[in-house]
Image 1 (cartoon, rainbow, N blue to C red):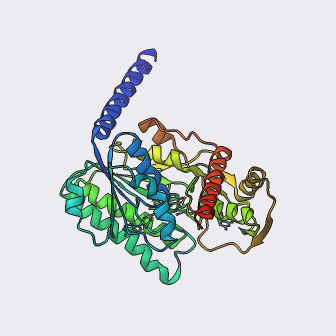
Image 2: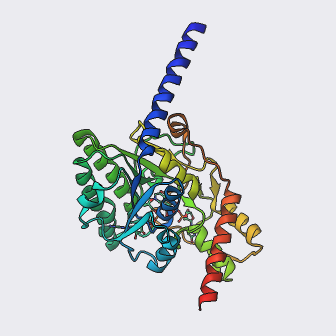
Image 3: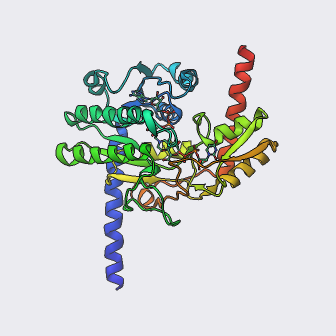
Length: 345
Ligand code: NAD
Ligand code: UGA
């Protein structure tokens, strides 16, 4: 028995060191392409890559899902760094060969987010930004095996029974958005198996923190509290999310490059209900606001909770930021941006 345990341990150690070597080799590379570079998560990723000494090419179409001005502010500091260049173009039509010829790693975050707005006529936009644009990138990558990480989503799972979800759980999305993210994962799988495209998909769980998109819950809640407007909770507020701090997401995204599995969950580890999050925001802002419960929205799942042991065991990643600390940072950034706008006007 003792002998078996020793053998198992040394095999695990050897596998860990091989994985570590593969990751270091991938990260030794110098120049990255980040799609969706001006967005909430992409702009933080660009900054993290620059701070690690890499050169970065950012691609973003500055889509109008929310104010392009917000995206210009997101990327303003990086634009002052000579190691960063920004290409304002559409991934679904841009000439990709010249962009990819100059990079050694790719982070694909461009896409159409938003669960609740994916019904009806806007679905065509989701198909274009999440599927057609991704397929173009995959075709271009098929000619050159550049290690790539793609942003997927917890919304590929749909409803669950309340226990942490492993990556092997069935994909039963309940929103058209979730369906396009699940379809993009399947498309990636086709290109991985048939063309050897080296892509790792990360299923991000509801991301929060500085620069959160203006359509997402916490940014709307902070805005309502700070501007003394009604704060709308969809449904009872008992629905919960495995909220994940943006810099933890960014760290996982960089660490996952060249990792052995095709897909990993990235979640904060301690789910909270919307009511709990609102109570925390009231405490942190020092404002009670006016909380109004409105009808629940189609496409919203009741709860999400990630099992992140695969990412921990194979990549060594663990979440590091609590909900309270992350919300404190988000409120501070909200106030900083508001004060900047006031000074400028
Ligand atoms: P975001 O909207 O802030 O960023 C996406 C960026 O992609 C935008 O700046 C947009 O202009 C750009 N873009 C869209 N279509 C494009 C195209 N065809 N060509 C070039 N640029 C294009 O969203 P985000 O919250 O930062 O999300 C980034 C990625 O992570 C998305 O793929 C999203 O589906 C995924 N994701 C986000 C969350 C979250 O909680 N924020 C959770 C799971 C997955
Ligand atoms: C988020 C992102 O917006 C998606 O792009 C992403 O794919 C998804 O996470 C994911 O994890 O895959 P969501 O969980 O709906 O989607 O994130 P929020 O918009 O922050 O909403 C969180 C909760 O707050 C939801 O239950 C929502 O119903 C609730 N909410 C939102 C309100 O009660 N009021 C609001 O004004 C906004």
